[in-house]
Image 1 (cartoon, rainbow, N blue to C red):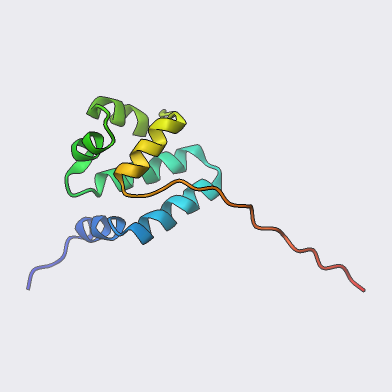
Image 2: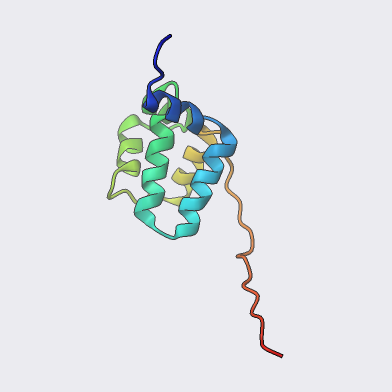
Length: 105
């Protein structure tokens, strides 16, 4: 019986749109720009056709995608949305969760 590679299993999980969207939403909710870029890099690297294939689907050069995903990357909204679509994800906005304050009666 062949031993499964942890990285391969991780990549396969990240290809699941439900897992990928939850992972990405958590990064967005954190408000941490570097965490969001790390998640995008992980999702990009998990693609079966790699970053090159993702760049083609996003209609951008491989170099541009690498720059966008770098630690110092600062993607424009249109580039971010292109990458999401290439990952078969969509971008949507919803209200923040409201915190219910209970007052003592």
